[in-house]
Image (spheres, rainbow, N blue to C red):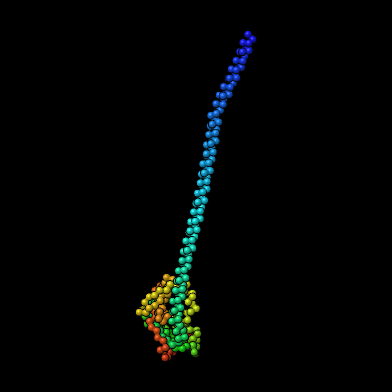
Length: 279
């Protein structure tokens, strides 16, 4: 009997051990999927981190590439601008050198008249609707200037200046009046109009920088046209360097009608008989 009880106890203990073992196994079996899920989650997390890092690397790479492309583009643009500036500088240099050569040639031709003191020339001046003819005559230090309005005969003026005697007269023949004064006090005359470039060497450098020069025939004469701005133009005969026409806009112009040199024998002083004299 005692042996049976002892046997039963052993069997019960075995059964309990077996049940405990089964429970442990069941717990381990339950835990296994959880571990697998955790491991999978960790793997997914690692993959996500890798993807994020790859995206981050790609973004950084793209930024670097874009920055490099931008810098290359800026360098290319800067290079193109510098090349364009260089081309413009070369073109402007050629423009200035061409002007200097032409103007220097004009000066050399006109220099022949630099010390000329015997000449007569006639010009027509147009100012809007008014037109006048001017005649300038010089012999040594005596100069006579006459102007007549082509539309009104009563507008005639004679200016006479003798620098040897320092005498000057401004007479108005139609009004029989005259102003007498020292020659140096009488208004300036345009006595050097055609010979402007005869003594203009000092001014050549200045006008080479901004003057457009081209060729054009005027009154059968081969001329250079000096165009300054949009309105001011000057025609200069190539063979002589003499100015033959000037336009200054607003229907204003001066046209040289004739020039003679070394043909003047005498310049007459205006006869003021019957004139009202003003000092």
